[in-house]
Amino acid sequence: MAAESSASPADSKKPALVSQPSVANEHQAKAFAELKALCENNKLYWPASEIEGYPAEGHNDDKDLLRFLVARSYDPQAAYKQYSASAAWRRKVALVQTYDNVEIQRFARMNRVQPQWTGRRDRMGIPLMVYVLSEIRPEDLAQISKEDPGLSSIFLPAEYITNFTQRLCNRVRNDGTIINKSVNIIDLSNVGLRKFWNLRSILQTASGMATAHYPETVERIFVVGAPSFFPTVWSLVTSRFDPATTKKIFVLSASEATEKLTEFIAPEDLPRRFGGTLDWTFPMRPVPDAETKEIIGGLADRWVEGPIRYLSKPEGDVLVAVGSQDGQLRRETLAHIPQGSSSRNGQPSEHVPTR
Image 1 (tube, rainbow, N blue to C red):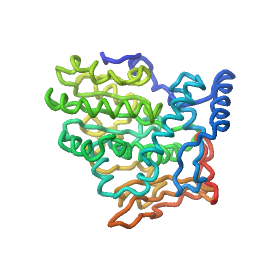
Image 2: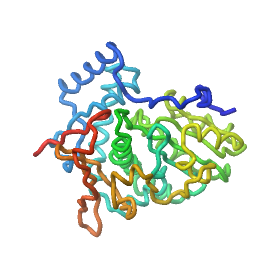
Image 3: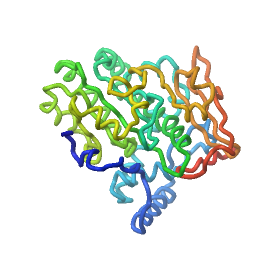
């Protein structure tokens, strides 16, 4: 039986619908309106990229506000406090500007120690991320920590997921369902106690910061290949997780992993490592499915390293490669998605103001 903090995914015959930030009743609508008013009255804005075309002071996006509101159980005052702290943190570490201007090779180093998008999605259209801990070298994480003691740059890949991967998958789904989360498979196979212990501090710090600044961005987490000592260290690993996160974690035994995973992920979208048929191994580049290829065109065959932004404009959506190389800023348009083929349902494409 799967070990988890909530009901097993096998309890339902069909996968649950996407757990999406939403306003489903009058109480939630009132809380959302109050949160928006708090931000407006206090002139609190989320930092925005100049590439998006928003005013210099930034903007507030409904889906971001809703994430914080859901994370705080629709308490507008608590959500405002967390949202305000996160906005201040983003400005302090210049996260938006760093993402737009980061050296591509540095970004690649950061990205290699993070969960990787397989290029595939689960049965609900949510991007599937994979993290194989045995492939992560403690010395690489130690070097990152040494170069950036605050660990703010380790969240550049998280910006990639929210600014590109999730938005792209939302566009591919294109039926009114909001796709603004990810599904993660964390593989702990062949990880010894010493390595686990050496990694625990930086992993705990990263998870704590993710809870503070990226709430409600994960739909569920499957842990596979857990070693025999795992129950002993489980409480240490999750000590900085908020209860909402732990409820999304499912620990699967070797005998049940494939069966449980394929309830949520089609075999053709599940890597062979986990019993599927997808020829993908960590940490290789994404292998997009046919629907995604139709949207991104040639990018599927010539994947671009480094940060990417998914921008929505009145004339259609655009994929833009950002970052820098050899001291030169990169602002390369990778793909155009014409307005006629872009749905405005679900998570609406955001209008980009002209400056």
